[in-house]
Image 1: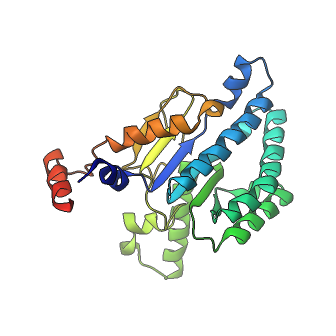
Image 2: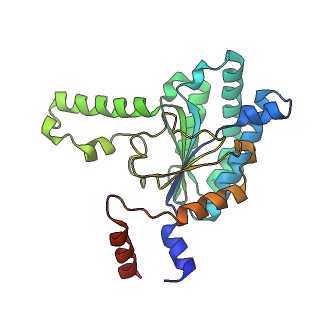
Length: 252
């Protein structure tokens, strides 16, 4: 199989990103942290465009974690305002690109105005057939798993299912991102090497890529480096390397 076909075969269907380093980017430039978050929006916009152009099936970004409420009140308030204005300015263009938007997390904690904008964005883009853009807001991986367990427990109590029906596949159907391909590539910027309570169920077999680049500096070249790294990974899913290589030869 030629190199181009091999790279196409190994191109990730689903990329997830922890966008870290906005505050440090601003601090290095003696600017307020809010300036870093605004610069981060530009980087996010370029990431989405690049993934659409590369025909990535799904992109999931960590916009606001359930732990981010612990930040100073002024910064949280600024983040909420930025989130709202970004939704208002970007949804139309995303819709024109046939991007389908969905939001994962406990959105009930946000203002009614922001919740309405979230619902409007989802409703407007619901039938789009292009890339699925999932935005994690007030999201935590442990919350996600606990919420899935709660839903399943309620179904057991109501008699809809039996306790013997509960297995990994059933849980998989009730966590966030159910119905999407499992994440292939996890990218975290900013130098830290941890997943920070993001998609802890879904990342079981995901390739983890870490870069020192701060999020506002993450451009198309940085994305290409991550994709090139991914192409060279051998994804075994419990098999031996020889088994994977043999299967690739057969597929060729």
